[in-house]
Image 1 (tube, rainbow, N blue to C red):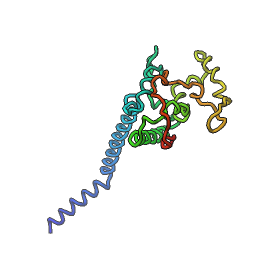
Image 2 (image 1 turned 180 degrees about the horizontal axis):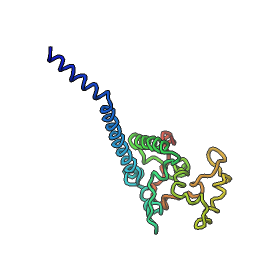
Image 3 (image 1 turned 90 degrees about the vertical axis):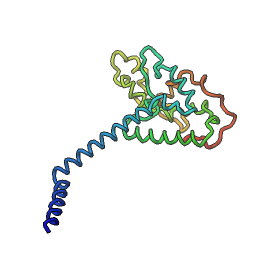
Image 4 (image 1 turned 135 degrees about the horizontal axis):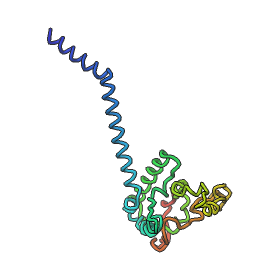
Length: 211
């Protein structure tokens, strides 16, 4: 009988611990540590999968990587500043939008590389779709001084004044549309890329239409 009372007391002690402030403190600590670990892994994963070394691991991206390394955005210039692939090819309006589009693009690329013959893609023709894969928010994420029009970059601001005023219009596949950065800067990011791309195949399968 005494043994049962002792067992009950031990059980009550455990319940009091987990349902008391001590248990709550332990749960909060474990939650914080778990969140920190998940955040750390996420940040490292995003960083390691955003640059040219990872992106060019796909064979079809080799020509783009070569042209990128010869471009000022790839560090080939006096400044030595490097823009990662994700800086241009992902939206920067919000962190959530960035991560969602990164996941979508990554899954699409893996699917195409795994299930299609990428040698049949006409990359020369695909260049005309650049406005679908380069985001103005990415450009302005680095070139934010263009918006300020301060004295050192007043000339650059003046050149882009119509763009910022949303008065610069171009003809696109959808009709007349507001200009995007790559409508004027057609060769940005990949210096003389046409010299690195493979010759265009004679015919393309319908399965290579843009997603």
